[in-house]
Length: 286
Image (tube, rainbow, N blue to C red; front, side, top):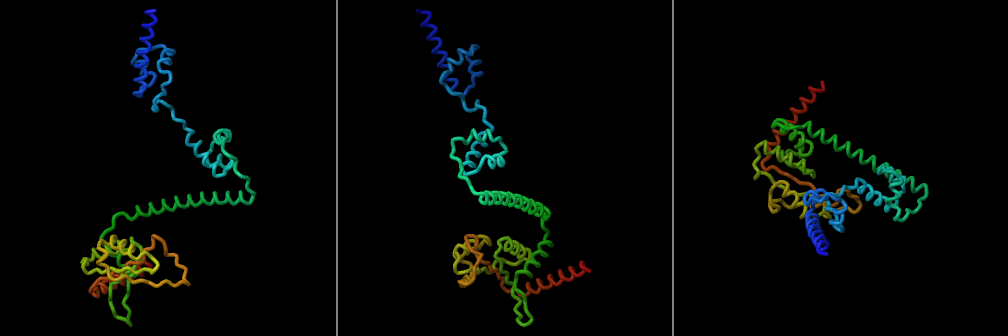
């Protein structure tokens, strides 16, 4: 009787140690080596009811596929459609989704429309990927810009988007208007290259009356680095109800007008640079 009690006490003590080690996250092999238990049956009894630590469980490579298959089934996809997208067998799909309701049957024309839409979505994704790759490759071709390159780019940019002097209206003002923040940043970098002092610049927003005028002022002020209070009075365009405008929404912020005070001399230089560019273009085309 004493011997039996001693064995029971020894077992319980050993089990307590095994359970404590298991809860610390040790594997069966580590517990076996730590407690010197070579008998698997005894080890099973010591660890009975204690789940293995998460790190010892082998991940199921198909868990993600199973979850995605169930999502597609709930969207109303057939086995064929799920197989086409996931590339797994129909038998596996059937096992994964057998508890889900069957999708309603669609008429052939609806099936054709769905298939066409899926093909078009795939085509758009491919086109977007090609488009992004082309843009990234082109961006790398530019590299670092020299001051001369910035001078030429800014001159062409101003002549495309800035105000021009007319023989019948001799004003020679330097006024630039654009809605693209990237264009504005390049233009301001060009003015800095030309040593135009910041205090000579005046900013004003041009925007439709239906837009968020205050939000647009804050946006442009942050972009150019001046407080909104420093902006001149906003030019608000009246909305014509007969006109269907596409420049709407949260991304519409109107145009920014940048005027250089006392800009007559600068305007003449710009016109001279531009005329030289035209002469060079004619020479290259000859």
